[in-house]
Length: 94
Image (cartoon, rainbow, N blue to C red; front, side, top):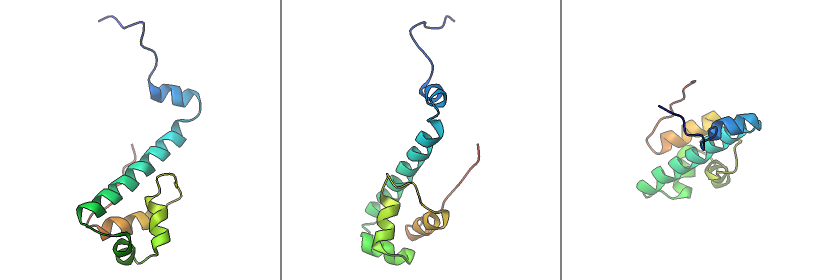
């Protein structure tokens, strides 16, 4: 099979070349995590106040977790958020 000469490298290859791959990946993971927590809250009809209460934290702390731009979130916070919506965290090294 001939390779299409009009197709270049992948986005991953480009980001690695530019030294941006790790930052882009971290940012994407955080955005997805925030989206998943918020979606689970919506499915359960849970307010931010109730979520913060279940997590044993403040509403401001929850807002930081749900902020897709804030990538400074600790693992224990993520685990408490998952437990609060009846889920668990699954991490994997690949």
